[in-house]
Image (cartoon, rainbow, N blue to C red; front, top):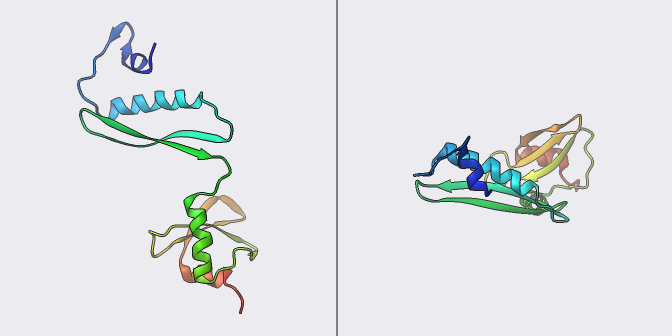
Length: 136
């Protein structure tokens, strides 16, 4: 039985889809996520990204990530830290810089509090330079 047949079958009655809408695509996404979780490729994680749709067509983004690879934001942190004069090797007793978001002009630096590692906070460039700036 295919993915579509599983989703469209309610008991013994099979439904036909006349248009794509949010509830139908939500059910389809959960089934696709379940199917993708069964696929294993060493060193790669597979997932569904955003979905754009209209009444007749839907497009899901398929995201493949190499496990342990740096994200875009982590690479940006290294680049902008050099430009802002920030030392990423400097150990702060409480905070650690983890990401840089270039589109967030007011609070581009993302950091964690070492006492609460699951929480992420945002900081200004001035804050980052004050706590992690290179000593001249």
